[in-house]
Image 1: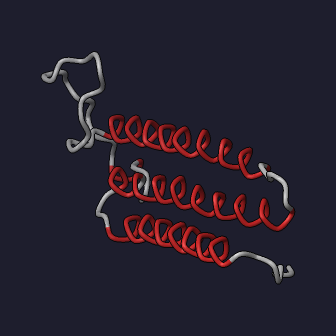
Image 2: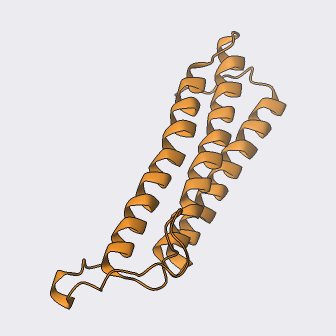
Length: 134
């Protein structure tokens, strides 16, 4: 990629700041994934890091290429829409599947499903050999 010799300094600085901010947000999400102690806590930080981090990088890309090509470049909007829609949906599906699995094996740390009273009888835990490995 060629850097335009006529690129204004404010564009270069703002683009750099947005890319670094996006990288930092993604790194924070990654650190949250590694540091938190259970699955339900771990799925949230990467989701936020991905959505916010990619948003900053896409804004930087839109700004840079709009100035270099001297026209509005909005291809990145499609990427942002796709990521913004798919990331939370993926999070909800993963958490829903994990909750159902943990409920089925009788994990006492999992909350009671909606619609059942708190004193609902939990199923018997699966035998040790049938339980999924983490």
